[in-house]
Amino acid sequence: MEDRLKKQIVIFGGCFNPPLNSHFWLAQQLINEYNQIERIIFVPVNSKYQKAELIGNEDRYNMLKLVCDKNKYFEVSRIELDSQRPLYTIETLENFQMQFPDYEIAFTTGSDNLKELNTWNRAEDLVKNFKFFIIKRDKDNIEEIISQDKLLSKYKKSFILDRNHIISNLSSTYVRNNIRKGKSINYLAPEEVVKYIEEHKLYKE
Image (tube, rainbow, N blue to C red; front, side, top):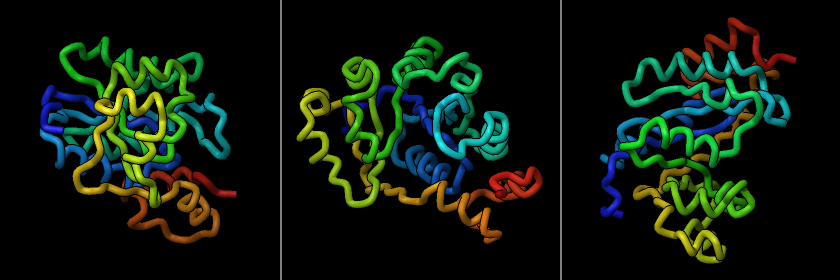
């Protein structure tokens, strides 16, 4: 892993519906563990993306920005929000590569998505041209997932497995359900996000 020392920008895509402490904890752990990472850019998906219960673009962007503005390593991009159509991951990463030609662009995703990566648009270009930080979900064996997939094993050097077994299983669905039931989400989401949700009455029945 030590040969990957070119400075990197990591793209953290997702719905962020809402942004949780676990999202920012994962991002900060990557910054702490990998000296080559200079910035993490959060990229919320467009609400045109067909996903149940996905609230509007602006609320999710605003919640992310409230937190990212307080961390010099974090940034929020509107690249997918302002697109006229949902972008494929490969398109988003290629856009960032053009924007930051002196950096290696990497993408962070969970081991659950890794299992389906070979079905993504232009999958071979994706794994050939970009690095991936893989976050373990549940009891997934990341090395096994890669070795058993023909495409992933061909480009296994593209996958960076975290050194300290960073794991994330907290679900945004769980948090939204708590909100609907009138239960507290303190300590599950940043204070700024909790306050924003309360003020804008988000995720209510």
